[in-house]
Length: 156
Length: 289
Image (cartoon, rainbow over all chains, first blue to last red; front, side):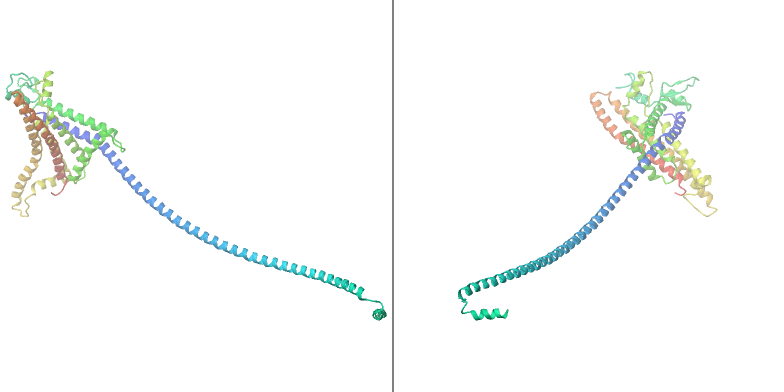
């Protein structure tokens, strides 16, 4: 328990030890810790940024989807409208064509009827003449009808 | 179990344990290692405690080697186990410094770490069974071996004086000689009266002088007293081992209890030494207090 040279020796070693810690121990460790802190902060910031970007992208996707849906609806409406127009046109055309064909048919029928009528008429005249001839052949007697024949012959 | 011969009395055993391995000059002029406490005392100031120096330097070297090894490999990436432990210490010290030290000085935190780690390690030697290392050193012919450097007042005073010198250095560096002297003489009693001023100056100087001197004295004596008392109790418990098996078992239980309690004390003493150093240096750095 004597105070002696140990005191001074210890004082010197204390100074050396503090210097050693200050020079070789403290700075690298603190530097590494600060670097890690900065890295973690950067990482957190990047994560935050990524999160934000993700949110933006989601929003953008939603917007695009809405626009696309709207466009699709528009296209669908236009197509429906066009389809109606086309159907309408087709109907119109069909009606027209039908009318035309009907008219043609009617005209043909009329023609045929006329033709038939003409033929019939000719045949009737022929038959009438034939019938008349037959009747005449039976009825006519040259004596009785001599004056008629003679008048006809006279007219020639 | 007692170190040395069986004929030792309890008193001699205790005294033996409290004697440092002292190297110095004998009264007859030749240099050598003292063989008893009386011889060591006769050597006066120009003697050195080889055991205190050996253990304190050995522990300092151990700490320095370990921390430098970690510091060299320190990465900003994921830290390994050792680095994690060291960083925990650094963070702990850094927080203490940031909490108590308001000035800006890159030396304070490493100083605090050095003090904490060194005092803690020196105190830790207290938990080694009191007879183990003296017995081992007895085997190689060294008869006095005090393994706890912080039970040597030379060691604790040296640390405190080192801190005290830093207090003086920074007080003068920051405030200038005039400011420092003004702080010692101008407070706590202030006056504008030219007649009262010399009187107050003397009173202030006495008060502040005591205040200033009390810092290193209390710093070193607190650590020394705590560790010396703790060591003494370990030695007294060890004495019980030679007093029959009943007392021996009782002593074993006591030793265990005291050792567990001592874990708290050695850490607390290291922490107090560090914290007070930071606070004193903060006071040295601040213009007004």
